[in-house]
Image 1 (cartoon, rainbow, N blue to C red):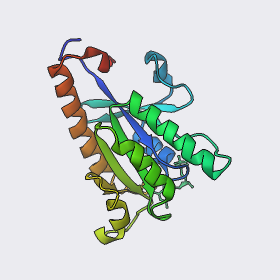
Image 2: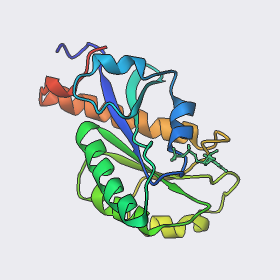
Image 3: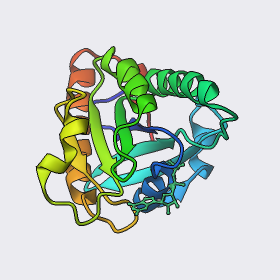
Image 4: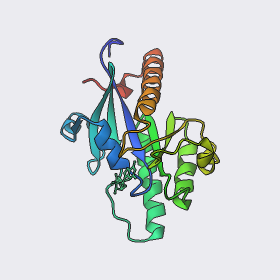
Length: 188
Ligand code: GDP
């Protein structure tokens, strides 16, 4: 692929059910699902949508959509979904719910995420109006460096998230061109 051709980084949103993944997905995407046909190898039971930030384009993946039957199944399913998302994406958005606080399943997901070195951004959703950083100390305790507060429903923190994605996306593109691994770049 020519270095100047347009490319898309794949961004997966992972997190427990009900933290607000779909709300963020819907806020960020303009087109959804229809474009999936052009990307062989992607899991079909997920939502895919196009996210444009300035001149960069991202394929956003919402990993939600299953109904867990019990606590054990949530943990297993989350670990599986998270691993799959990590495998098929370039950037991970890990979402937690400010109102529910840090949940044991969040810690399981964090363990899975921590084990790989793909760029990741931690978003604490449903945090509308919460400005004091101390309110997020439990989440900071997981040890991730990129953490932002968000309200998918009210639009707070969205531009900070976009800034992160833009910087990650550009870094990925540059390094991929550098090591010339064209299979990781998707033509649009
Ligand atoms: P998902 O299961 O992780 O995809 O979560 P959803 O996007 O379906 O959201 C779960 C619930 O949280 C819904 O009732 C949303 O309206 C609510 N929700 C999502 N984002 C926010 C937010 O930023 N603030 C508040 N207060 N509620 C939210």
